[in-house]
Length: 125
Image 1 (cartoon, rainbow, N blue to C red):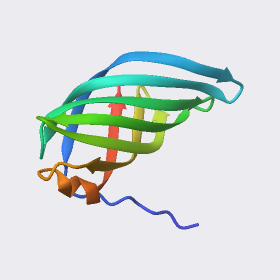
Image 2 (cartoon, helix red, strand yellow; image 1 turned 180 degrees about the vertical axis):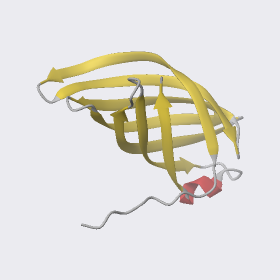
Image 3 (cartoon, one colour; image 1 turned 120 degrees about the horizontal axis):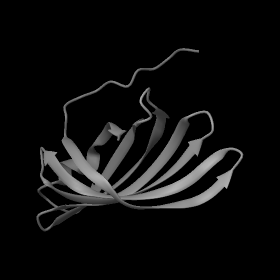
């Protein structure tokens, strides 16, 4: 099997936020399913605020899978975001994650996001 490396392009934005609330949805022998509600700020090619809900399946082996849905407000313009990816526990207990995101907006100023497929990576402390 040949491994594929995700190529990285230019940085579109940096998101900094915090978990506003969370809910444990299920506990089983395969792990824990939970949801986080996050809020924060966006800086980069555009500036604004975001709120998102991330559904996470934390597996017993320390890996996880996630799916997110969010809204970004850039002034009066709105962007909706969907994403999915994987995560794993880091050496200090933090969760490192990565995945893909897609955007949808009716804003003429941000219409370039409609054809953008983004790569996201980060660290939950």
